[in-house]
Image 1 (cartoon, one colour):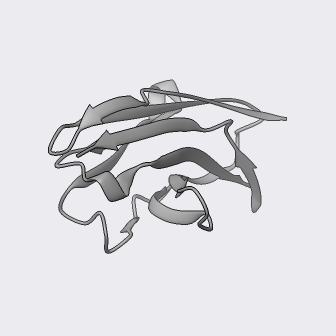
Image 2 (cartoon, rainbow, N blue to C red):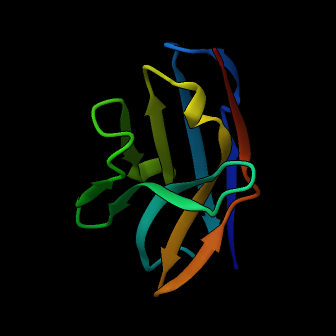
Image 3 (spheres, rainbow, N blue to C red):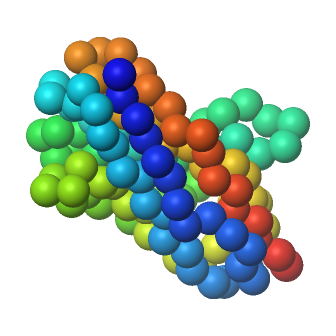
Length: 115
């Protein structure tokens, strides 16, 4: 069993910043990767950023240069620093963990960017 607890969402004006956190616990001995996805109203869930255990990072084109993913291994926590937020970044953000090639999801945290 893997538990993912997200925090840090909220309401922010365009151009502002937020930092999301996701703490993983449970059976995460073979944690392959962690990352963030988002789902806007009426749209499919999409990748935002991922970070593998080997340190490889992948960003969606829409967030490159604005968002930064990082990890604190000691705390089993992954962060998403979001700068220069735009109204189109409004979505529910989900933490994702790949453990022994099985995906696990957090409950989601809402990010709302006002124009």
